[in-house]
Amino acid sequence: MQVVILCGGQGTRIREVSENLVPKPMIPIGDRPIIWHIMKSYAEQGHTDFVLCLGHLGWRIKEYFLNHQSMDTDVTVTLGHTPKIEYHGPYTEEGWTVTLAETGAETGTGGRVRRVAPYLTGDRFLLTYGDGVSDIDLKALEAFHKDHGKQLTISGVIPPGRFGELKLDDDQVLEMQEKPQFSDRYINGGFMMIDRSFIDDYLAHEPDETMLERTPFEAAAQSGQMMLHKHDGFWQCMDTARDWEHLNRLWKSGNAPWRTWA
Image 1: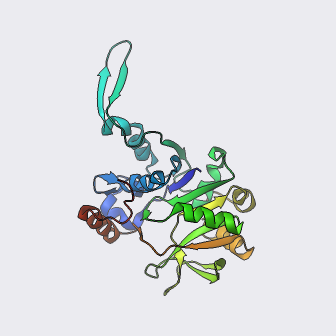
Image 2 (image 1 turned 45 degrees about the vertical axis):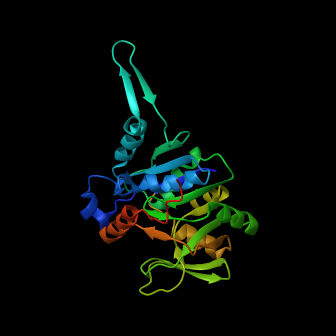
Image 3 (image 1 turned 30 degrees about the vertical axis):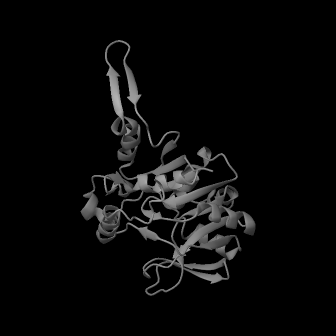
């Protein structure tokens, strides 16, 4: 199953860390950008076909992946009229497929998903944001999605109440409220599974600036097509410098909860 990752936002609340030189997904946790940590988590559970929705400073993400193997292994370079590059040693990201799609610097999250639709080949796909890590069980998410038969599953977490909250009837989402002042209920933590038909039904005729979390998700909730998979394990977004510092402390401690790989 393909994994679509939203990587195009400007990350205005964390510019004191990025200094506007790299997009938020390229901000490092330890010695690797957070996008690598996210992709590594998916790959560990068998998902290695990625579609990255690029926007603000997207060329920096392209640069990273175009040079990734050269930076991560020993290399022999043959110069001259018949140049050749030979890579040596094991390569931990062997077999990853990464589609780097330019979806516009000002495009909304809904517009980005619509723009990468031509690259999606299956009946459903995984979707997440390029700034959050988790130890979520993707097999459990997939089983839940297949069992309820709706078009959209989002993973619910309960962090501090500064995000859009969800009104539930058991596991069915009835209403999505954007950033209430106070909350002690589940919010969308990303790590979603979506039927391909969702794009045709809720995004096909929306403008580029459409935010996925507003009109499309609200419409899906109102029509009974949105379900919540409750995740009670670790989840942390990297929205501010304080979040970044927290994630780096966890990584440096050697006990980062999202590190499910060897």
